[in-house]
Length: 170
Image (cartoon, rainbow, N blue to C red; front, top):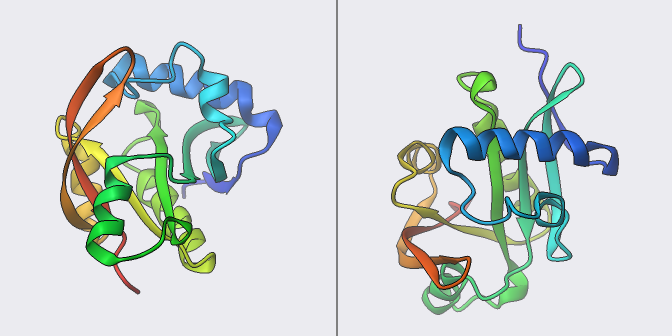
């Protein structure tokens, strides 16, 4: 039986979440931003809520819901739906360390964020880089709807082709 729990992020999780983020970046090259200042990236002022996956005393995963801040996925969705940005949240900062994969932790973290969106009357959107095939499969398996494409901007003028998604209506 898997003893991993998904729970709200606490300030005491910052060191463990930073270590997990660094591990995932070394393994997968994700995220493309935030690694230079991981603690600031994990505790952004734009964060509405975040959760960790904890196995024993080790943080093995993370997800957040952010306020919209000019993301292409937000623009696409508000144009298509007519929704105001106040009704939108951005699913972000999802990661699970390699050793903890295969236990549905990514799915559990995403479902936790989706539940937050429903309970706070926010439709969640995201962009995912085309290279991140496993993440794309996860979102599509969970019923997320593709809304279009955008460029995911990061660093000094860098960008990657990305697909945009919105949570299903439930």
